[in-house]
Image 1 (cartoon, rainbow, N blue to C red):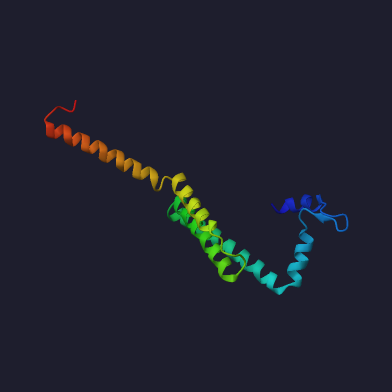
Image 2: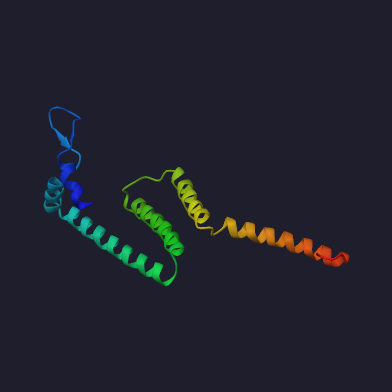
Length: 142
């Protein structure tokens, strides 16, 4: 992905004729990080958190399963959202918790964690009741 920075630098974006913009200006980004200690600390913290998340994700996948890693990834999204609310980077909107619930439900459906096991239990219990009735009635199962 780092190599994409090169062609992105040469792709122009024209919002105005006064100051031409670029799709991605990595040189300006490095200058801004060098000129702002806050931005430097935030960038360093971001790099450390991504490294920690990748290490822990690999460890969880190795020790448990990829499904567990995806569930923990959903929790990470919740954690980041709560931190950004606490710091004041964004304002609370009522649709955000609904979106998070949809995200988690979608993850659970995709990995067959909730609805498919419940459906299988329901079907198994229905079959069990049917067999029990047949046995109690004295008829042959074959």
